[in-house]
Amino acid sequence: MRFEPLGDQAVMAYADDEIGAAGFAARVRRAAPAWAIDVVQAYASVAVFYELAQIDFFHARHLLTELVERESHGSPLLAQRRHVIPCFYELGLDLERIASHTGLENEAIIRLHADAVYTVYAIGFCPGFPYLGYLAEQLANVPRLRSPRLKVEAGSVGLTGRQTGIYTEARPGGWNIVGRTPLELVNVADNYFPLRTGDEVRFERVDARKFEKLRGRRLPLAD
Image (cartoon, rainbow, N blue to C red):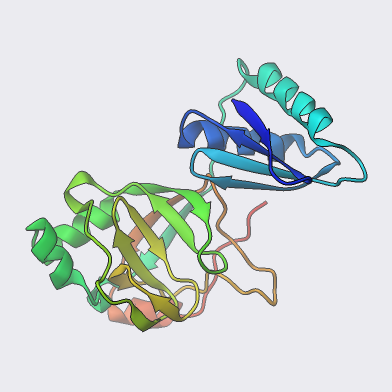
């Protein structure tokens, strides 16, 4: 684990891989140091933001190093929360495009996408947008749209490269839309952000009737 300053109010920790970073983020959250304001993972790095009035970079780095050394031979790194997110694949606007790039039939695309268990490796792009990895090899490396859509509906499930993700609000976007979830996954006014890095996500195929029944429902909030 390598530590570097991020501005004057954060330590950036670099792990060997995404699993190591998720484990480190889980450890810091579990330890809940009083000086830590936020813990933000992005793939193989973790930013630990701190209160400058309480601690500086060198002291924070020392305490984080001790935390890693103390727990490196202890309990498992991750205590992942697991979510099942319904997805109506018949709203997959780009299934034909994905099929042309992968050589797969639509049903095979849906099966591969829904069978995988993904990890939230980063949150960004728009509020609460989860970057989920990694796609099955057969679905990987489909490029973004040549021209992004001016509006992608909230709940749209997209994929590109090795990743899949969920548009949490209506906005422009260039990912290939494979389906849509009826759930509300972000509400800024309510401070509702149920997904966090390190969580596991699996998609469950639903039909039009269940899509309407679940429209607007929420996932449980993180602890």
